[in-house]
Length: 501
Image 1 (cartoon, helix red, strand yellow):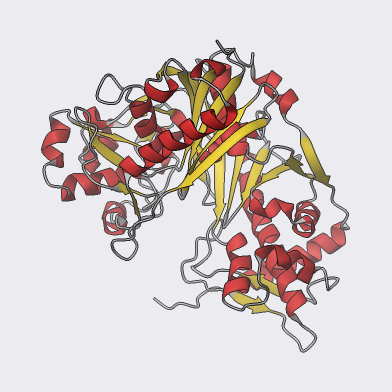
Image 2: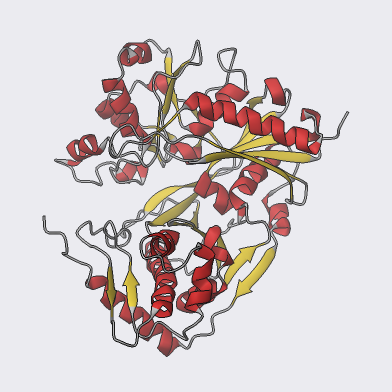
C-alpha cells in the first residue's frame, strides 16, 4: 500500500482541465491536461458541455495516476480550483444537465442586468454582495435558465434541479453523483454568484426573491479548506478537501496571507487581488469586494479584486493584426532594440476602459507619435501599457483599503518578460517577485486541501514552501516615475468620448 505523500489539484479552467500532483514541498511531480470545446451558439453566448468537463476530468486524473504509477492511496487529499461564475444546472436524480454550462464571459443576461439596474443603479446589490450588476456573475445566469429552459422552473421548485459553479459540479460527481454526491460550494465561489451576503456568508433571501431563484437549488456554502466528502470511482477513498475560485487560489498559492499582500496574474488580461484581512472593504473605485479564502472554522479573509481587460492581448494584437513579429515571446527582443518608448504611450482601450475609469465610450490610442518612432518603440509602449494599467488598479486598491503595498507577487504567461517585470517594479516603486512554482492556482487548491487533512499543519508552514525565483527592484528615480505616470494619465484622457451614445 502506498503512503499518502501527495496532494492532487484539479484545475478546471475555461479552455482546459489540468490535474497536477504536488509533493510535501509544494513541488510539481506530475501534470496532465486536456482541452475541451468552446461553443458559441449566438453572438455573445459562450457555452461548455458539463458532461465533457466531467469526462475530461476523469481522463486527466486517471492519466496522471498512470504516468506516476500511483494508486489513490498515495493521495492525502484532492483540491479543486475552477473557472469562476460559469453556471451549471442538473438533475440531482440522474446527474443529467438541463442545459449547457453558461460560461462566465457569456453576455446573454445583459438585458436582465439592465432591467435590475433600471431604478436602483448598477450598485443595487453591491452593499450586500460586493459586486455590481453585471453579466459575469452566476445569479442572473440561473434566472435566465429558469425562464428559458422548458420544465426547469417546475423541477427547481420540486427540489430536483440543482445549481452549481464548476467546483460544485465536480465535487458532486467525484463524491458519488446521483448516489449520494455532496452538493456544496466554497465561500470564494459563492461570493461570485451575486447571491451571497458577504457579511453573513449565506444566500441572501431578498436577492433570491428578486431573481425568482428557489433556495433549494443552491449548494451549501462551506469553507475553502475543509473535508467536503470522500471520492468514489477512480479516486476512491481520497478526501475532497479544498476548493477555491481560480483567482483566489492564485492568491492563496502565492502565500498572500497578510493584509496588504497582493498578487497579479498576467495573462490575456490581468487579475489583481489584494488581501484586506477580516474586514469587508467596500470599493469606491470600481473594484470588486470578494472573499479571499476561509480555512476551516477560522474567520473569513476578504480581498479586493481589479481586472485589466487588455494585457497579453495587446501583444497578440501586435502579432496577429499588425504582424510585427511571428511569436509573442519576440516582443521583448523587439522592445529592447530601443532605450525607451520615444515619448509615445499606447492605451489599449479596445473595448472601453475598465477599473478605475469604467468608460465604455473610450477606444484605444497611441499618442506622442513623431517620425522618430519605429516598431521597437511601439513594442515597448505595449509592454509598458500593462505595467501602467496595473499601477492604476493598485492605486485604487491602496485608496480603498488604506493599506500600502510592500511587494507584488506575480504569475501568469507574461512574467517571463524581464523588461516588463523591471518596468513594473519601477512604475510601482515596490519589488516585483516571481515564485519558483508558476502553477500558483493549482498550488493554492492543493494547499487548501492539504491543510484540511493535516498534510500541512498551518498557513505559516506554507509560507516556508513558497520560494522566490526572481525579484525585480525599482531603479527609476522618483522624478522620472512621476513624469512617466503623468504622461500615461494624460494619454488615458485622450481615449475618452470617442464613441458617441
